[in-house]
Amino acid sequence: MRMWFCILVAACCWLCRPALAQLPAGQQGGEEPPGVGEAERPGERQPGETDPTLRDIERERQKKLNTERHQSLKRDTDRLLQLANELKQSVDKSNEHMLSMDVIKKANEIEKLAKHVREKMRGY
Image 1 (tube, rainbow, N blue to C red):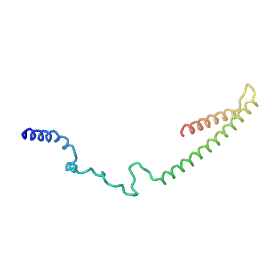
Image 2 (cartoon, one colour):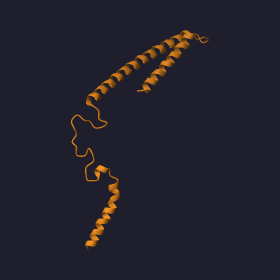
Image 3 (cartoon, rainbow, N blue to C red):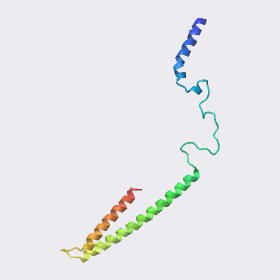
Image 4 (cartoon, one colour):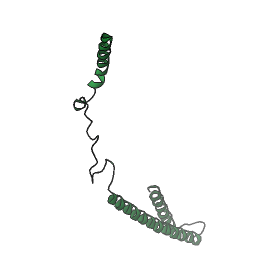
């Protein structure tokens, strides 16, 4: 019986050997890995955690940028409406056989401004 017990213990040690070989050198003696059991120090943050004041500053910055973007879009769309009205008046004044260069310039300006407004809306 004693012989079977010794063989069993030897077999267990032999089977556990590969698992122990994979542990780092400092952990084989039953020591806990670094960081385990250590209390968190006040003032230290976990990786990826941000300072609450930085979050507030970033939130305010985003809010200000959004307000500026909205004002810019409003200004551009007002200008777009004004140009479209001017274009309509110019076309109404012209006859069916001739358009002025002013009409073509306004149409190009409207097109550029419309593309700019579209890109601004897509970018945010």
